[in-house]
Image 1 (cartoon, one colour):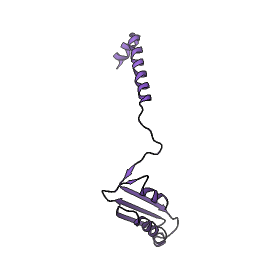
Image 2 (cartoon, one colour; image 1 turned 120 degrees about the vertical axis):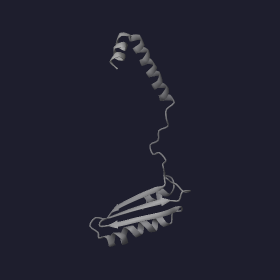
Image 3 (cartoon, one colour; image 1 turned 90 degrees about the horizontal axis):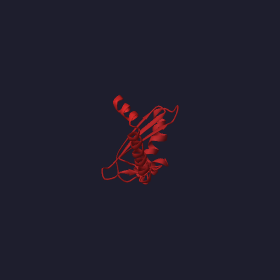
Image 4 (tube, one colour; image 1 turned 30 degrees about the horizontal axis):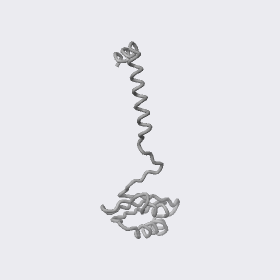
Length: 115
């Protein structure tokens, strides 16, 4: 490492050529850039839902929140498995899609966001 730094310090033309090559590579990547997305489309096979209901006992959480989430999710096509856990003040629900169905941001996932 020290030898290469010493070599570039003595050979300024080589150091400048390397800098120009790096700048050209940067300019090339700037104009042929990788597509960037603010909200990229992602494909999910599983959706996790966590909801809080502070101070409520598990039976009230189940009746007031868990059952409503499960009823809303049942109408979505391709749901293979749904597991919900109600505890004091919170609900955790895991929903899995069939192998042929993948949740995307444009499809059923929007249904989850509207709950």
